[in-house]
Length: 457
Length: 170
Image 1 (cartoon, each protein chain N blue to C red):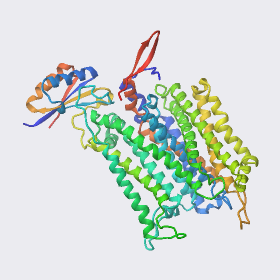
Image 2 (image 1 turned 45 degrees about the vertical axis):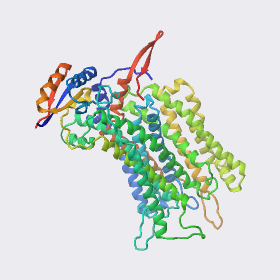
Image 3 (image 1 turned 90 degrees about the vertical axis):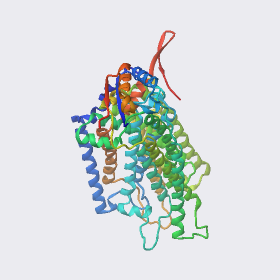
Image 4 (image 1 turned 30 degrees about the vertical axis):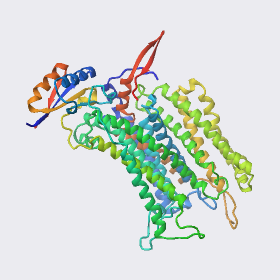
């Protein structure tokens, strides 16, 4: 990694805290637009609560549609954030510095949004608490711990709490920096949040250990959470869901979509927040190389899922795969999914010029997430499109305008929360950037001057 | 005699390290010296007292507490509303382990964060002797010494090239 510009601590403060310390007009415009979309989605949700789930496209026998697809999608996005940050922190990769905070923050907001989806899906959101929390003290009825619907919130709440603590712990030194540059009530608030941070060697040492220790603890949680989400499907008896490969398949799929989302986020951040001094082609290049490996591993698990179905030749499962692969509109959606998730982006990422182009990487990373949303939809809906015994009325699934509005609203919500976060906290860890600048130097090797990194282990 | 605190502000890390050396040479115990900086420096850069922590204990204790809560929750809820299904044992161990695992990890993570704060001596209600320039690249060398040695500390900081010397008030 090559540091093109040596920045002083004051310059780093100024550039990374620009939006925190002043409010640019473009920020107001974007937040207002996103806020309006979120308000529109909230109205659609209110309408749905008032009218009932009949305003959605859900009907016999398909009772899991866009909302559950969106739940899986956002859980997936959330996963790679902390995963990439934790792996890079554990391996002490230098190129982690500009991306860890944004990735971790995206995790938190994507998880919050994913948690909303089952609530929306329930139609009467308050009822969902019946599954998770004790609801009838008089009769002593408790939630059934044998149900995946209890495992899910347990895992997601664990992950959300852990990720939030992970973000906050690494944020404390930056809160002190903002405290020192603020006045009035802002200084008081940041002072409280910074907990009286001074930055003595003891605090810095613990900050370093915390980064590594929390990363080591959060990685197994990350793997477990998406495995548990996959068991919502895996432990059911629905053909094509009841497969053992679902846990790793879901986990690697989550990494694929999540790391792509990190790329999208970094490129947008660079453009909007003018972070050219911090996010370079080399960073995107490194993530793109990681994506090639992840995408190919994901393709392998996808292939396994298909191979297991072909190997068993179980009639109902074959019917589901036939529906997915050969019957429109699913066959068309399948084609779009596989083309967007793998066939177009991965061969393109083989070229260094593509990997180092912000434009190409923006579009290919967005494409992956279109594909991965469709992947979840194709896993869920065709598997339910079966005429079971004693089912006499059934139809296919067509998402309604309410559902589409809520999906768009969920994307706007994550962006809205990220924009709000960026107004109050830096999206790139200021103290880590300063540390990175300090540890870098150049050495002459023969005729070349190359970057050298001073590290302690 | 009451103790007092002084802080010398340095822009150059080498000067700050020089000040630490001078203070130690002048007989100020290393435990009474502290360094404030806006970003981490490699351990021992200023010849400071190397802090020891017992952070590793916290995740272990947290994990044990989380495990116990997970066990209580999963076993307790099944026992308090016994639903025997198909003559199988009341406690269904495999799904219990899923929730217990999550609780164990959650306990470990919460306690790690608590441990980081506790071992960092945070939160602190008052900043005390501090300067905002520290988060802009300056290095603050803090000397905690008896009142009568304040003069010696000040001259050591001055001779090392401190840009400014602040003294704790009150």
